[in-house]
Image (cartoon, rainbow, N blue to C red):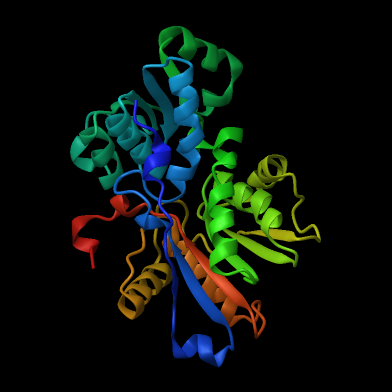
Length: 314
């Protein structure tokens, strides 16, 4: 089986030059992890790296996981299975989509094209996915499957962000702020955990929640990262809850306008579920004075570009 390590690339940290940033006396870069793999893109490459190795060592033949209609994790798992010889099975939230493939999101269409078997669950059954009895049933029904949690967030996924954090420290040793989109919290937890390994000055790590009422993620991020929310130290982090618009997978007019502005100014595509809200949150924080002059800000592009419908390409 091919190793995922062989395709992990050192991605560029691209400077973003604009009069707005000059006016605020800050420097801004974007970490282009949307370029780290053609199909297993962005943060999902880091999350899957050690999980795929573990699945191979255990002799598993398929990958089984969970997600919504706009889940980048679903698309990345399907792509990883296609590329590395695993069958893939996705349990999708929303049984109303089961018999209406014409209503599938670009993400679900991509997963299906990469061979993923899609099983649609109603929302009540989907909530059972973390219950022990449901997990045991899946293990019995799919004994050859390696089961990944929603979003791919587990301890092996967190480990995958050590290399990314080291890259950032090499490319910009004195960065002060890092913004990342947050879905299940794994990417943010990994960045928090390992950023402190490669610095000797405080870093501010800001997670922009992409879904409503996401404060329930804070204990999970604390547990996975080993760092408490708003704790003083080398890795100081916050979960920002006010920039999700109408909720997960939804762009209100302000967020859409921000995405179009950013793409026109910098010729860098954003996805319509995660990085759009990260950019929106960053710009709102800048406008309200939450980023002091002299800051060196990194915006983490976590990929997800398969979620763009054709008419939204730039």
